[in-house]
View 1 (cartoon, rainbow, N blue to C red):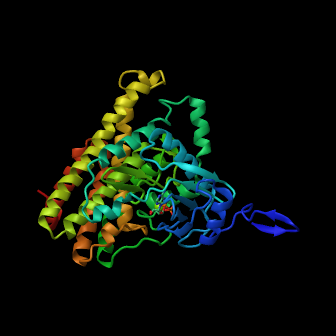
View 2 (tube, rainbow, N blue to C red; view 1 turned 90 degrees about the vertical axis):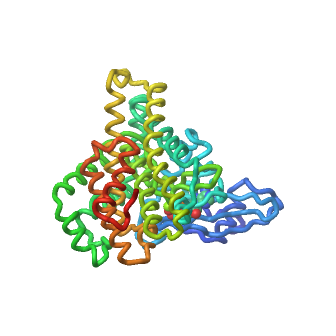
View 3 (spheres, rainbow, N blue to C red; view 1 turned 180 degrees about the vertical axis):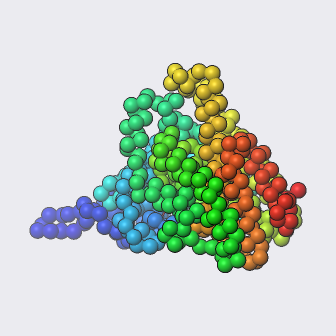
Length: 421
Ligand code: ADP
Ligand code: MG
């Protein structure tokens, strides 16, 4: 607070980019969470490209909270990005928390002026991507993540919500700037490098030219999937459900960071999860030296890929049968058709996610971290082959086992080194 002409003024009446000291002042002025005699500490712990994340804790009581703060400029590149993303994230976290209170962090406060979300600290959980790279296994992951996707998405669709309510929600969650990022990075640039941002290893340039840039049939299917992403306002999605948005420990699962949320096809969320599990699998297959560790990890991750898809299907059917409200959607064959569309979108999205992380400029450490160049090049080729097949044959990939078999068959056929039994 500052004093102006004898009146005490808050500094937090107009947005500015806050640092750690600002956050301490902000907490003592705005947030009624810590005790009066608390000894507060603060640290910026953000590791993403977009926002600032502060952890604030009291060394006396050990109470803590997280403040996610959006600046008008991107944390990484400094370019402008609409801060409305922070409103969307706060509202979506609240909606998802209602459906899955054990999985989604609780929001204590959303401040539209300073663009902050004050929320539960889930530091006891760790980043799934990093944990998988250490070959840790999480028995509840498939169950938790399939519940999360079914409960948070199906509850927002037309089969369940009143049609007017649903349309108002579609409008509330228009997320232009962030959807445009996905449209470019996931759907367009890996196929047509119109912004010149793709990052491809020298050795795979020709392979990618032949197999992606020059494959008109593939470009057409990517275009259809993009059209579906842009126009199929099926459900309120998380929108960025990669393994860095999922946090885990042996007791459970948390899902963070839904700032890319918008109304889109359910298969986009499910496909993102499955795609990222493939990266962890390939990394283990290529880099793990400990045979026993590899065996345990592979058996768990292949079962998890299978279960995420199959449990999604089971839970979707149960949810639908119990809660469908639309009269026409109760008619014979409708549910099967609806689920079939989701599964086809899922397979397409797995393929898109796999390809974009190899070709585009948002890489994953699961692949870039493969130090042996020859292994990395082969792993990338295997992923591209796999991704293409998923996009091109998406209508026929309907069971968890189909995904696992695709990797097994392709590695046998084309990439002996990764031969899976
Ligand atoms: P960005 O939008 O910039 O990607 P994220 O929401 O992914 O930001 O948060 C960045 C990092 O901050 C996460 O990877 C995690 O380590 C940490 N973080 C974010 N929210 C929480 C939370 N509620 N509890 C604990 N850590 C968090
Ligand atoms: Mg993030």
